[in-house]
Length: 226
Image (cartoon, rainbow, N blue to C red; front, side, top):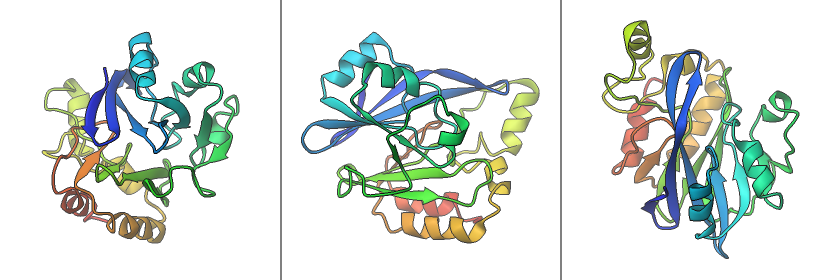
Protein backbone atom coordinates (compact mmCIF):
# COMPACT_ATOMS: atom_id res chain seq x y z
CA UNK A 1 0.00 0.00 0.00
CA UNK A 2 2.79 2.42 0.96
CA UNK A 3 6.17 1.88 -0.65
CA UNK A 4 9.33 3.47 0.80
CA UNK A 5 10.95 5.84 -1.68
CA UNK A 6 13.79 7.09 0.50
CA UNK A 7 14.40 8.43 4.00
CA UNK A 8 11.10 9.73 5.44
CA UNK A 9 9.17 9.52 2.15
CA UNK A 10 6.68 6.89 0.93
CA UNK A 11 4.56 6.60 -2.23
CA UNK A 12 1.25 4.92 -2.98
CA UNK A 13 -0.62 4.24 -6.20
CA UNK A 14 -4.27 5.17 -6.40
CA UNK A 15 -7.06 4.19 -8.78
CA UNK A 16 -6.91 5.34 -12.38
CA UNK A 17 -8.50 8.68 -13.22
CA UNK A 18 -10.40 9.31 -16.46
CA UNK A 19 -9.54 12.66 -18.04
CA UNK A 20 -11.25 13.40 -21.36
CA UNK A 21 -11.31 9.70 -22.16
CA UNK A 22 -7.66 9.13 -21.26
CA UNK A 23 -6.79 6.81 -18.37
CA UNK A 24 -4.25 8.25 -15.94
CA UNK A 25 -2.57 6.22 -13.21
CA UNK A 26 -2.36 8.20 -9.96
CA UNK A 27 0.28 8.44 -7.26
CA UNK A 28 0.57 10.22 -3.94
CA UNK A 29 3.50 10.74 -1.59
CA UNK A 30 3.71 10.88 2.18
CA UNK A 31 6.56 12.85 3.74
CA UNK A 32 7.25 12.55 7.45
CA UNK A 33 8.51 15.81 8.87
CA UNK A 34 10.44 16.31 12.08
CA UNK A 35 8.18 15.73 15.07
CA UNK A 36 6.23 13.02 13.26
CA UNK A 37 3.76 15.19 11.33
CA UNK A 38 2.87 14.00 7.84
CA UNK A 39 2.63 15.94 4.60
CA UNK A 40 0.25 14.33 2.09
CA UNK A 41 1.22 15.30 -1.45
CA UNK A 42 -1.38 14.87 -4.20
CA UNK A 43 -3.80 12.72 -2.18
CA UNK A 44 -5.35 9.75 -3.96
CA UNK A 45 -8.55 7.93 -2.99
CA UNK A 46 -8.50 7.23 0.74
CA UNK A 47 -9.16 3.57 1.49
CA UNK A 48 -9.14 1.89 4.90
CA UNK A 49 -5.86 0.03 4.20
CA UNK A 50 -4.21 3.26 3.03
CA UNK A 51 -5.54 5.13 6.06
CA UNK A 52 -4.09 2.51 8.40
CA UNK A 53 -0.73 2.56 6.65
CA UNK A 54 -0.53 6.35 6.76
CA UNK A 55 -1.48 6.57 10.43
CA UNK A 56 1.20 4.02 11.30
CA UNK A 57 3.76 6.60 10.14
CA UNK A 58 2.56 9.62 12.10
CA UNK A 59 -0.12 12.31 12.26
CA UNK A 60 -1.58 13.85 9.11
CA UNK A 61 -1.09 17.60 9.46
CA UNK A 62 -0.72 18.89 5.89
CA UNK A 63 -2.89 18.07 2.85
CA UNK A 64 -1.19 19.38 -0.29
CA UNK A 65 -2.80 19.34 -3.75
CA UNK A 66 0.15 20.53 -5.89
CA UNK A 67 -1.76 22.11 -8.76
CA UNK A 68 -5.30 23.03 -9.75
CA UNK A 69 -5.82 19.68 -11.51
CA UNK A 70 -5.15 17.36 -8.56
CA UNK A 71 -8.09 17.94 -6.25
CA UNK A 72 -10.49 15.01 -6.73
CA UNK A 73 -9.86 13.36 -3.35
CA UNK A 74 -9.05 16.36 -1.16
CA UNK A 75 -12.50 16.49 0.42
CA UNK A 76 -12.27 12.84 1.52
CA UNK A 77 -8.97 13.49 3.32
CA UNK A 78 -10.36 16.66 4.91
CA UNK A 79 -13.33 14.74 6.26
CA UNK A 80 -11.11 12.12 7.91
CA UNK A 81 -8.44 14.60 9.09
CA UNK A 82 -10.33 17.80 9.99
CA UNK A 83 -7.41 19.14 12.06
CA UNK A 84 -5.02 19.02 9.11
CA UNK A 85 -4.22 22.18 7.18
CA UNK A 86 -5.17 22.10 3.50
CA UNK A 87 -3.05 24.25 1.19
CA UNK A 88 -4.36 25.79 -2.02
CA UNK A 89 -2.13 25.85 -5.11
CA UNK A 90 -2.65 28.79 -7.48
CA UNK A 91 -6.08 28.67 -9.10
CA UNK A 92 -7.69 25.98 -6.97
CA UNK A 93 -9.59 28.26 -4.59
CA UNK A 94 -11.50 29.67 -7.56
CA UNK A 95 -11.97 26.26 -9.19
CA UNK A 96 -13.19 24.53 -6.03
CA UNK A 97 -15.02 27.10 -3.87
CA UNK A 98 -16.66 24.17 -2.08
CA UNK A 99 -13.34 23.16 -0.50
CA UNK A 100 -12.02 24.84 2.63
CA UNK A 101 -8.39 25.95 2.45
CA UNK A 102 -6.48 27.26 5.43
CA UNK A 103 -3.34 28.42 3.60
CA UNK A 104 -1.92 29.10 0.15
CA UNK A 105 1.04 27.19 -1.27
CA UNK A 106 2.41 30.23 -3.08
CA UNK A 107 2.46 32.45 -0.01
CA UNK A 108 4.09 32.51 3.41
CA UNK A 109 6.59 30.32 5.23
CA UNK A 110 5.29 26.78 5.51
CA UNK A 111 5.90 24.31 8.37
CA UNK A 112 8.04 22.10 6.13
CA UNK A 113 10.59 24.86 5.40
CA UNK A 114 14.09 23.52 5.89
CA UNK A 115 13.01 19.97 5.10
CA UNK A 116 11.06 20.44 1.87
CA UNK A 117 11.80 23.26 -0.58
CA UNK A 118 9.28 24.47 -3.15
CA UNK A 119 9.07 26.51 -6.34
CA UNK A 120 5.90 27.70 -8.09
CA UNK A 121 6.38 26.80 -11.77
CA UNK A 122 4.44 29.71 -13.22
CA UNK A 123 3.76 30.91 -16.75
CA UNK A 124 1.56 28.01 -17.88
CA UNK A 125 -1.98 28.66 -19.08
CA UNK A 126 -3.17 25.18 -18.05
CA UNK A 127 -2.04 25.30 -14.44
CA UNK A 128 0.65 26.68 -12.17
CA UNK A 129 2.36 23.72 -10.56
CA UNK A 130 4.17 23.77 -7.23
CA UNK A 131 7.31 21.64 -7.49
CA UNK A 132 8.87 20.33 -4.29
CA UNK A 133 12.28 19.07 -3.21
CA UNK A 134 12.52 16.67 -0.29
CA UNK A 135 16.00 17.19 1.08
CA UNK A 136 16.40 13.98 3.07
CA UNK A 137 15.81 11.76 0.03
CA UNK A 138 17.13 14.26 -2.55
CA UNK A 139 13.85 13.90 -4.44
CA UNK A 140 12.36 16.52 -6.78
CA UNK A 141 8.58 16.10 -6.89
CA UNK A 142 6.66 17.11 -10.02
CA UNK A 143 2.98 16.48 -10.74
CA UNK A 144 1.76 16.91 -14.34
CA UNK A 145 4.67 18.79 -15.91
CA UNK A 146 6.47 15.48 -16.36
CA UNK A 147 4.62 12.39 -17.57
CA UNK A 148 5.32 8.99 -19.05
CA UNK A 149 2.99 6.16 -19.97
CA UNK A 150 4.20 2.68 -20.93
CA UNK A 151 3.97 1.59 -24.53
CA UNK A 152 0.57 0.00 -25.10
CA UNK A 153 -1.15 1.90 -22.30
CA UNK A 154 -3.30 3.73 -24.88
CA UNK A 155 -4.86 2.18 -27.98
CA UNK A 156 -6.39 3.46 -31.21
CA UNK A 157 -6.43 7.18 -31.85
CA UNK A 158 -5.54 7.87 -28.21
CA UNK A 159 -2.22 6.11 -28.73
CA UNK A 160 -1.42 8.48 -31.62
CA UNK A 161 -2.42 11.53 -29.58
CA UNK A 162 -0.31 10.34 -26.66
CA UNK A 163 2.72 9.83 -28.91
CA UNK A 164 2.41 13.31 -30.44
CA UNK A 165 1.98 14.73 -26.92
CA UNK A 166 5.28 13.14 -25.72
CA UNK A 167 3.31 11.09 -23.20
CA UNK A 168 4.92 7.84 -24.35
CA UNK A 169 8.50 9.05 -24.89
CA UNK A 170 11.35 6.71 -23.79
CA UNK A 171 11.74 8.70 -20.58
CA UNK A 172 9.36 11.09 -18.76
CA UNK A 173 8.81 14.31 -20.69
CA UNK A 174 6.83 17.54 -20.62
CA UNK A 175 3.64 16.89 -22.63
CA UNK A 176 3.33 18.98 -25.78
CA UNK A 177 0.11 20.57 -24.55
CA UNK A 178 1.97 21.94 -21.53
CA UNK A 179 4.87 23.15 -23.67
CA UNK A 180 2.48 25.12 -25.88
CA UNK A 181 0.70 26.51 -22.81
CA UNK A 182 3.85 28.18 -21.44
CA UNK A 183 2.91 31.71 -22.41
CA UNK A 184 5.03 33.19 -19.63
CA UNK A 185 8.43 31.87 -20.67
CA UNK A 186 10.38 34.30 -18.49
CA UNK A 187 8.53 33.16 -15.36
CA UNK A 188 8.94 29.53 -16.34
CA UNK A 189 12.67 29.84 -16.92
CA UNK A 190 13.14 31.56 -13.56
CA UNK A 191 11.34 28.66 -11.85
CA UNK A 192 13.42 26.13 -13.75
CA UNK A 193 16.67 27.82 -12.77
CA UNK A 194 15.63 27.66 -9.11
CA UNK A 195 14.76 23.97 -9.44
CA UNK A 196 18.12 23.22 -11.06
CA UNK A 197 19.92 24.46 -7.94
CA UNK A 198 18.51 21.50 -6.03
CA UNK A 199 20.89 18.52 -5.69
CA UNK A 200 18.18 16.18 -6.98
CA UNK A 201 19.15 12.53 -7.27
CA UNK A 202 15.59 11.24 -7.72
CA UNK A 203 12.54 12.64 -9.53
CA UNK A 204 8.99 11.68 -8.63
CA UNK A 205 5.86 12.48 -10.65
CA UNK A 206 2.17 11.64 -10.46
CA UNK A 207 1.98 9.95 -13.87
CA UNK A 208 5.18 8.19 -14.77
CA UNK A 209 8.00 5.92 -13.71
CA UNK A 210 10.17 7.67 -11.08
CA UNK A 211 13.74 8.56 -11.90
CA UNK A 212 16.06 6.90 -9.41
CA UNK A 213 19.46 8.36 -10.32
CA UNK A 214 21.03 11.54 -11.76
CA UNK A 215 17.82 13.48 -11.27
CA UNK A 216 19.26 16.91 -11.94
CA UNK A 217 20.68 15.80 -15.31
CA UNK A 218 17.29 14.32 -16.18
CA UNK A 219 15.47 17.57 -15.34
CA UNK A 220 17.88 19.49 -17.59
CA UNK A 221 17.13 17.13 -20.47
CA UNK A 222 13.38 17.19 -19.90
CA UNK A 223 13.23 21.00 -19.96
CA UNK A 224 15.93 21.65 -22.57
CA UNK A 225 13.26 22.92 -24.98
CA UNK A 226 12.38 25.72 -22.51
